[in-house]
Length: 255
Image (cartoon, rainbow, N blue to C red; front, side, top):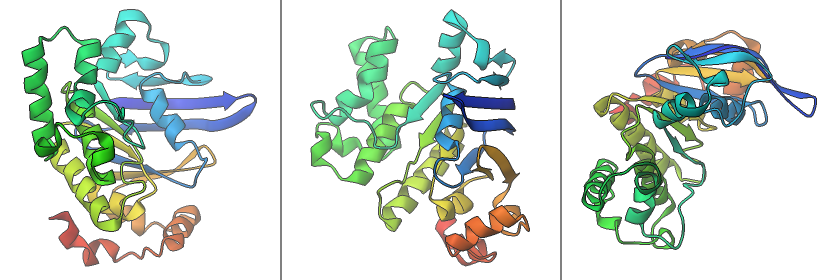
């Protein structure tokens, strides 16, 4: 579905991505991990053309995102939902009003159609009771779920997550990861997560993509990732005290 071909990105002469190539498969959850400043969020932004490669190409099916313009680019972007790191909720709007924003700004849906779509999205993230509350009145985990409801309200088939569990306690992080997994299956979506939550990625993602210094170190399913003998992967796992048997010991978290 999504394909990066030798993507290079430079900012003021500094190379952030150095010939990155990988693909994202239909229906999978791909977790993008790696040290801070290694190009994870930059990679995500190339998928919706918030950034354009210095060289190389990014594809969505048979459309080259990296050169798309006008209506073609608009159509590409309509397929994506985006969950920002902090939820990015507007404090002067209720949860329901925040979720409705993409529909009000980018569609011609009627008020009743918008209301129904918002209610459906809030139900999907188990947040119906918070519709009339303001962001300051709900917890961090609920804010993340509200942001997720806004990301899925247009029924986009690809969702991009920028640190979906950042700032959350371990129990709430598991709840958010389970929700992402459930929605991915139920709605037949494709999900790409940039995350520092490596344990969550190992438990809930279908494949892990590790970046370091702008290069792809490894793309592999969790079992292969934790058993990799690549030094950079081994060092990354060891720094988070993750051993090869972590999946077996924590399997109950997947249920």
